[in-house]
Length: 84
Image (spheres, rainbow, N blue to C red):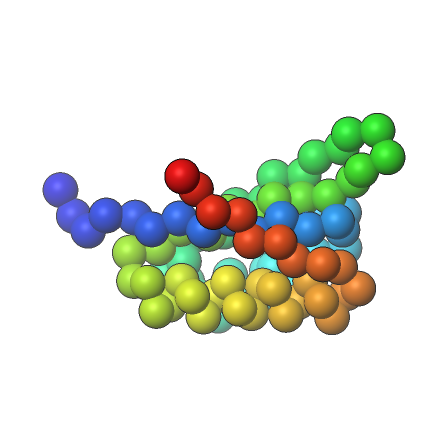
């Protein structure tokens, strides 16, 4: 039971360690949004996928915007992934 979870994924070309402090502050601000951090490394390509989950779409949208802004502030390029 309960409300369905809405999931959004934002990838970027920054290491997880560079995002950690800012993500902790965002998680504190958006306690109703779960944020998972999944680093990846492929030869020549380092980055992280951030998976945000919530039941409230407006709160989720706001959190995604703040996460994307953090990535840009740190010199990265956020790329929101859509699920089919």
